[in-house]
Image (cartoon, rainbow, N blue to C red; front, side, top):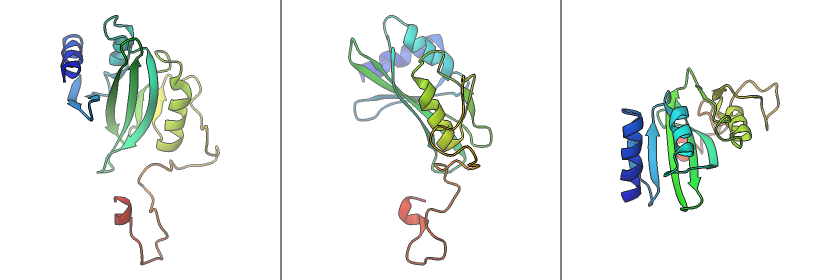
Length: 164
């Protein structure tokens, strides 16, 4: 909890009103950041000598349960102190755009391409935002909750079994 409060206070000092939610999840600090501030916050977390989150462990997409918002989750690591944090940011599914993190963390390149490929999140400023795993002709984003998971002619299963 001490780490959460320290990071929260530091971010609030430098980015007032950027944090929407700060919580601990299994002893893991988690921050939900406004999507228009995420690039600045990521830059700060990497460049700040005290926080020193120099390693992007993971980046992926997420869709909220109400199916109206998409988001991106960033996992950052401070190796010298062995500290990890998770940042989340959300935006409207009808305008799935967010600034790229490739200029901060070069490793974000393929992770952002994968997130684009499966969720349709467009990373503004990405150097080569094209599909990475699905065929180029594909006009859907398979991880979005827009399509039924089972054959609709079957009556022995429903989407409720899959959390919908």
